[in-house]
Length: 294
Ligand code: R5P
Image (tube, rainbow, N blue to C red; front, side, top):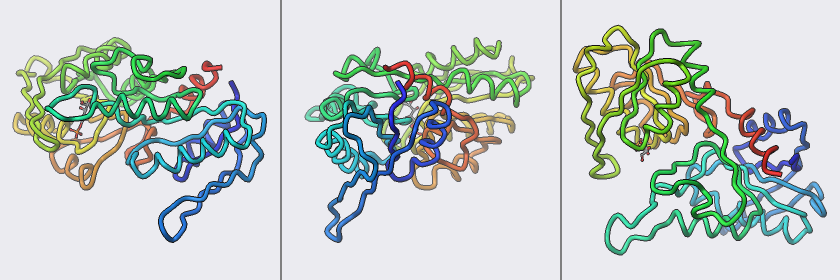
């Protein structure tokens, strides 16, 4: 598919890169905030009869989702033939079970909302832990672009003799794939999360790999507590060359500075969420996924 692309605010760079890779056009969408906080949506490019895609990475989703749904509703009303969502970072996947009594399984409800407004969804490495694939909760066609090759390529070009480290059992899926591609060993640590900012990591003795460069790879870096705990432990053991790679650079509050201070020698992310640590380009694989969805 080669949809007419529309950027939601803040997604202009990714939209331009996708347009280049897909040889697609970019349409003009205006969103205006009224003084009372409501949103006016206006498509300045006609969408009648068009296959379109809205590009919106879903960091801080609660602020973004209502304008996004209103834009999808407007496009539908104006006669768009199909409406896709390109969300390089797809939010609301971590609450994939009722962890405590009375909690909502918001991943399911969010998937229902998105499925009701869009005809298809493309994203990069969604956080799938207890779900096997997005189709478990999304009722629309979905396509996933993977960052593994791009991360592996970056490691090959920038790190000598890497040791790939996954912070927890969930990470084994991508850590093992990256390690295979760079032909390096990997270890998976043990993580217990006791609260949003309360994470305990148990790292085994990594002494046998002391000649290697530790490369910690995680999908989402949010409070960075997961990476910080690993960095602190390695620092205590005299390791000063830790490389941290995150797919989705959420970095809440001071998380980025705190991770640097904790001992990360280099912090690198993909550009699914715009951040100063972005060095790994996801537009080509995302464009391939969009192309494949039609
Ligand atoms: C775990 O579920 C994820 O794979 C990440 O490890 C987690 O989201 C990282 O969160 P934080 O940066 O807040 O420790």
